[in-house]
Image 1 (cartoon, rainbow, N blue to C red):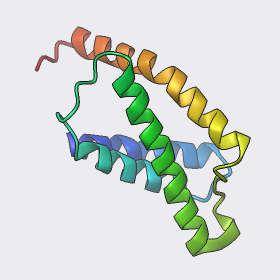
Image 2 (spheres, rainbow, N blue to C red):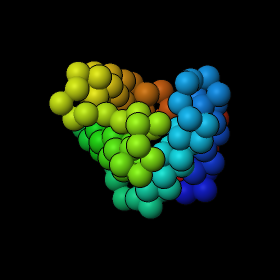
Image 3 (cartoon, one colour):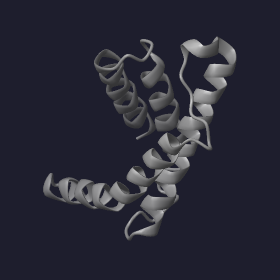
Length: 118
């Protein structure tokens, strides 16, 4: 499963890199890292309900901001980073938190319809 999360993170990041003005590889790097980190906790959480998807998406958004901040410290202003006092960060966090329960619910239904069982 961890390999699947890393792979999907990498390819979604590459797609975003080509569609955005971000440096090539930046989105794929932090999405791959978040996928690998998430894969470490596979089976450790009960994802049904409302609060766990919200908590996990909040943690992933903060992890993304920290990774971008570290990359900004290493490579300078070529890598855009978030300021934790910026409305852009809090707006992204809010959208992620609002969409997380619905997204997790839809993905669970797709998994069920595809015939994959535990």
